[in-house]
Amino acid sequence: MPAMAMATPSSKASCLLLPSPPPARPSMLLAKKRTQRHRTLSCRASVHFDRRDMLLAGLTGVAAGGLGAYPGHAATEDTSTEVCPRGEKVTDKLLACQENGQKPCPPTSPTVFDFTPPTGPMRLRQPAHLADAGNVEKYRKALAAMKALPDSDPRSFASQAAIHQAYCDGHYRYDPTKVDAPFDVHFSWIFAPWHRMYIYFYERILGSLIGDDAFALPYWNWDAPAGMSLPDIFKDTGSPLYDAKRNPAHLDAYVNLDILNADDTIIPFDPQAVQYNQVVQNNLCTLYVQMMRNSKAQHFLGDKFCARYPGTVSSGTSGSLESMAHTSVHVWAGDPASSELGHDGQQHTGADMGFLATAGRDPVFYSHHANVDRMWHLWATKLGRTNFDDPEWLDTSFVFYDEKPQLVRIKVRDVLDASKLKYGYDEREPLQWMGARPTPLLLRKGGAAATTTTRKLRGAAPAPTFPLTLKEGQSVVVPSVPMPKAAAAGGGGKKQPDTVLVFDGIEFEPSKGAKFDVVINVPPEHAASAGPRHSEYAGSFATLPRGGNKPGETVVVALVLPLDEVLADIGVGDEEGTVNVVIVPRTQGIKIISPPRIETRER
Ligand code: C2O
Image (cartoon, rainbow, N blue to C red; front, top):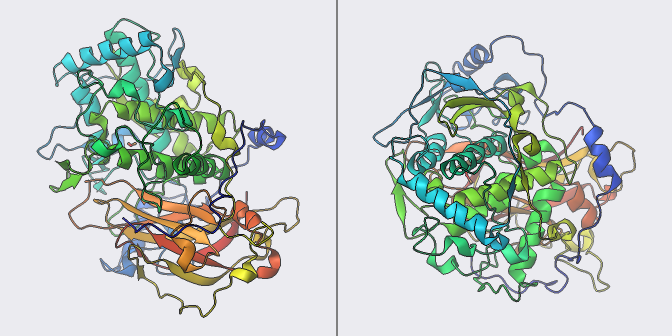
């Protein structure tokens, strides 16, 4: 944990909060009409032959270990086109589950039914902190019934929790006959739809166990100040909703949606006085960045899934939906003193919620993910953003047991519209985060954002060399990163492209949590105190521990952060030409393989 930072120069002005959300802008509505194909850096869809053969050809002669083992990261030009140009369609036929001494694999069934949209009443998911007593009582009864089923029943709570373990702890393998890499539903564009499927079936099984086809999960409304603590319904030790493996220090505290930041102080939760303390402010700004600034599918939902062929970069990249509030809530809820065995044979701390393999064993997981799902739903509906239209994503499919229980094959395209799945969200709290746009950390006397010129490094340290291994508590300035001409704010042009900050290769040990923040044009002595409530904050890399890899094994992922609003809000104009990119490590030992760069991408 980093030491507490000094008071920030603009502690009063941080993150302007509007009392109520502004109406949707017309441009949000227009955004819906865009049917333009989603594009990524390496999206040249000209490959017509088997990608795997191509990859293997590309790998010939590449030594294991070292930079050469990561095609696309040794050179400045991204050559990942050759490995995985459009992402890969995952189907249940390409996945196989292996027990490895633990028992997370679901029973197999000779018959798999294709998903058909449900009929029956709408299920209205209520905020957990405001849920009516009847709904809570139904959940208690249903969960008690689920827990009473024998573990071998695919509808049992043990089986439901094991689904998550199987899909994120290395039990499912991708294409074992050819590739045999651990498959994970996190860290790519699979994250949002897979978790929607998972809790959809969980909710229906619960409903069927109490004979109520309108039963709906309560959602943990952590995006509203009054919902920013563990909901009471999960605290009663005699309830089936209780789980003993939670951080005792956090049971009655404000949740921190930007975990491991400089203000990691624990503030007791007070439902009578939920207004703006520092944690609430920081949380609302974190959500603003996650939801409002990450407007493109690639930034919000994560990047395309690419199988982890031996010796290549890891699958995909997390979007802000996964890496920001979602990851923080997991880490915040788990008990740091409690550890569990992973597929790698190692003990991992943070059980249950703070370790992917065990997260599904805490009933609060499903209410947490109902809110993650609601965030996606709001992004696509209220904010009018556009999901991917890539068939590799849309036709990705998984199998789940439904309430009958029958094995059902369901595709991403089946779950894009919650109303077609016959559930919805009861919105009771105002969406305050919509107005929580960050404000500058560094101010000039008049109150305007300090210009970059006033922030140019004086007597700057020499530029770091890459690969660079981060040390917790030591911010690193990458000085004078050039901006493409169109990147600077106010560049004119009708059709301005997106400006993004790109880290090609971030190497880390997935068995441990990892995090660093990125801020722009902040002197190193102030960098550690910058965070999501400041305009200078560009985003974070953050992951949750998982046990699916071999002990000590590292993976490499990319990170792409939208930069246009940051540059506009800190007043970086065309004439500047460069910015200082400051990396603020929040954990120890992450390796940054090559220097970050700024580029523009077609919208
Ligand atoms: Cu599958 Cu919140 O994790």
